[in-house]
Length: 183
Image 1 (tube, rainbow, N blue to C red):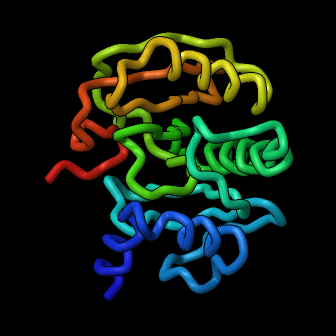
Image 2: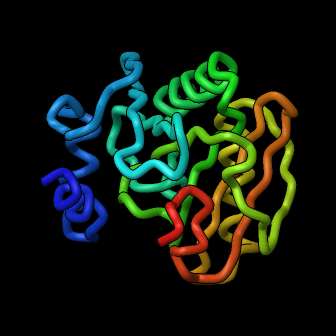
């Protein structure tokens, strides 16, 4: 049942319902809650690529990183703070990865928390300055719109300890997604 629900959540027609559930009824989702704030929630990943793979999701309906607007600021700041605090508190975690385009499976903005060795070598990478949440995300949006070829998967990869950020992208295939289990 859990696998079926996860598969349904990845379908385009279910996007509005998935975003509504994360915003208003996250307790209905078949996910184990690790931490929660007023505007964000941390879950165990339903199909983890490694031990301790977590998801941080804003409790607001936001389709993707490229759909973020100025009104989403408070939710982004809380997602950012919660993600960075989790990475700082968990010795096994090192990176915050936010997928977009073909690499984003579920049509709701979310961040993956991963060990550094779980992200494979990048096909293309462009470093951006790591600043506050809104500034860094705005810079990532510009790069994703201007540099990433149409249809290719991409991600914003943040390393809080090293204070670095980069937009990475590869070919169009979702299987190159750095946060997805290789099948």
